[in-house]
Image (cartoon, rainbow over all chains, first blue to last red; front, side):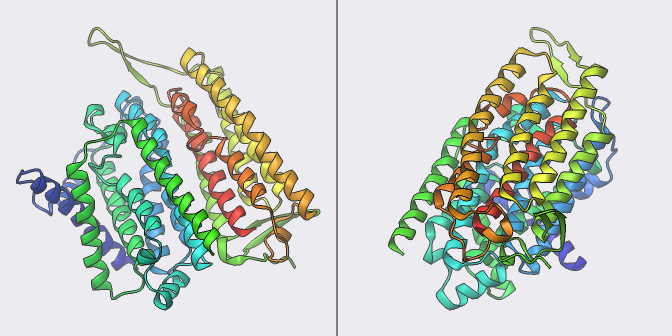
Length: 280
Length: 222
């Protein structure tokens, strides 16, 4: 388990590097090497670390540990093919990490990042429309049952593409440089992560790399099904590159436009779900 | 011995706490939510608040805001009350108790920021309060419909396939919980977040998310 955790961390960091490289090449820039995020995390691990004088010390540190804890737990839920309700519960609790990072430092940039993260909580709603639809179709929220269902009936990606699209938007909203990434927009420096640096930033990079790995892995398992692990990695990479294209080509939305887009996605999935129920 | 009728959603029950005919329970899912609520309640108890830095426009000056001891005590008290209400809601085995704890969360959320004498924050708290109070109508309405149509509010019975809960009751429950601070009814919450006292303000968001996670499990199980 520990070896897989380390594998997931380094793969997640590598995926972040590939994401940056792909965005840069699409935008006609050379971009950093793909291992840049791994080097960043190592560098931050050995940088001077302190807690700002204005910070709420316990909360400042606790949210970093919570971020590491929840995404490690999410990875193990995936490996054990557990409940996707728990998995997405953890995804929602990540929102608390985002709030806590921004609010704990006392920095105005962090605070604006936290306020924006409250606004961007609309991204969680398409997720639960997705879960409801999956439960209705497969009759279970256990990942093992969902994989078994797909083995018998074909991938959910083909059976319920609008639901997969909603999940895709959910993942997109959590990617760096995404049109929905209003909490870390450049006009507020690094947003809610502005004051976390040194070993805190390294730990956050590790936690967020796990988050990327888990979300991409979960998408493949939930919508494609049980396939060899090498094929899973290839599909994760293709999924990431498609996300990079969206991030490279779409401007960042305004905070209220992000809410509108995510609410529309939820409404579309709800309409789709009602249509499926009526037809069934 | 109690046994949940639908163990697949939140997992099989791990432990039950009986209060007469009201049976609270821990499943892997509710235990996770409970642990998270405990964690942030403890953080609210042991943390000192941050000192928010504000920039004075028109120059390069900045100043920090300190929370007065009386305000800190009140915020901390309300945050702990909010945490306890959340704990009650996430392990409740009874729909009425769940709705009661949910409405208590809404009240304590207003209390957490009400002590901060800032016009924007107080206006936001007022608006949040209006939405939260209106949301209690579908919340308790959902519970009332469930009782009227099934004759019980116990999740132990409602989770079984023998009892059909009307879709409108489920929709009302979800709507009621969303009104306590989920999108798209959460606009005032963004302004509330401006209030100082991060460990206490944070539990506003913790409680909303945990309640939403719980109600999703409840309506899918019924």
